Amino acid sequence: MAKNYRLIVQQALREVSIEEAADGRYQADFDGQTHELELVPLDDSSLFRFRIDGQSMPLAIRRDGMSLDVFIGPDRFTAEIERSAGVLSQSGPAIAGEIRLTAPMTGQVTEVLVAEGDRVTEGDGLLVMVAMKMNNEIRSPATGTITAVNVSPGDAVDQGDLMLVIDTESE
Image (cartoon, rainbow, N blue to C red):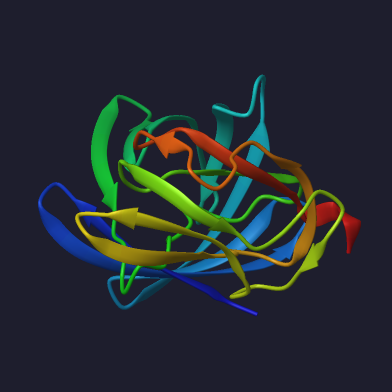
């Protein structure tokens, strides 16, 4: 099943659809074109060997909250992950393993809807936080098992703070 992302890259909204094929290979639809992608982690999961349409190059990703700096070969791209209706959008291709869900904005956690060990499916509500006087339900970006919950009701969080971890390999 393809995952859809809305990213603001170099001040332009871009829609990307990514479908995992197998073993770090993906098919991505970007700007109306389909590309074959392969990602091979080289170290701590921020540096990859990236192959697009058969051409290989180094790729590094640095994430700070909802901002991404993506270095592809000598080129640097800056992206902002767009939120829609209080739903957190996942950044980049979904890589099997661990999803570290961070606060999309500064606010206060009012409800935690899951506990460690709970099974969740993509789109399930995980927690509710108040920011700018609005309740925002944060939903699961993937199916998996909750392996860590780092927040409790009443906790103040800053954008980018780790809130919970989902293990997607437990499928």
